[in-house]
Image 1 (cartoon, one colour):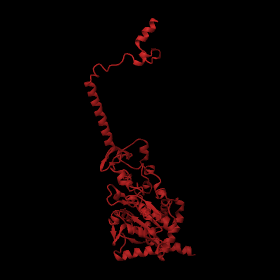
Image 2: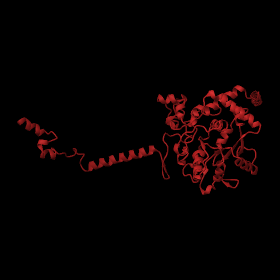
Image 3: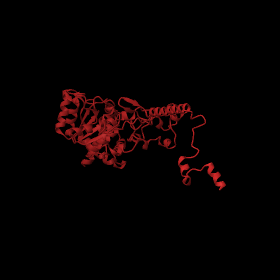
Length: 406
């Protein structure tokens, strides 16, 4: 009886927001797949959502703290772009966003107090967006008279899990690109150096897809478990296949049909963008499956080569996607020796020029020495063969004459 009342109550909440039961179940199926299950798990996801949302109306919200590090707030903007009413709005009611510099209505002292109260109470999720600036004792970033590094450590110590959202939070991203004066790095690496053992879930992307965060929240908040993670602590279901594996232009790649110039007939026919610098073969993400803007499109489908924004080694800021993949529309990345930046093609041209120059100099040397006039002098008979006729290796005209006389 209580279950029927709960379902009825939840259905009424959906109706009030203009969301049909059918749309909600479609969302649950999508969330189940994004979280690493099959669509057959949609009823279980729906039940978990119903319980959470109904619990939320009775004061049982799951607390979330969202902290901005060195960022452009792009991941926040990505997550906030939802049409209203929208099924995702219902999902978001499973959390209580107790602190967020960008999305919270309050500001100043009251916001900082809410964050501190949440931390003291414990049992919350920390979403961290942006790079961690380590130089100058963390003074490169200060909020409410605290350094950014102290803010991160304080919030992470009591959290159930930390979600490093976006490539900047995973390993520094843009901030960690050369010359990286602020010594920017990722959340997981900094927390490890600080001795904080709270599990970190890395969700790279610039910005991160909102469905990826929803999938993580479904696992942690509703399913009460961490998602399956790979060796870099990234959700396996999202980051264990390359973009190339699921790209709709893959068939053209296999057929050797490529775009070599923007505006060409090949581009109009949707050929593969690999020669224009597409990083799909080395970038691991499910962008081509989840897509963007309510699954309408994504970068490659819209005509742009993948620029590899999901590439991020959590333990190496130097392997940030900006430094690894620029220039974006060239096939090869820039190489660097100190402050000298160059392309591999430049090295090939220089080597070719040096070899060609050496051949020209050699030719002039041969001409000056006279070795090109009639050719070089050669021995009529090798000295060793002349001294050891019985063991001669070469064959000579005089040998044939002697053989004939004998």
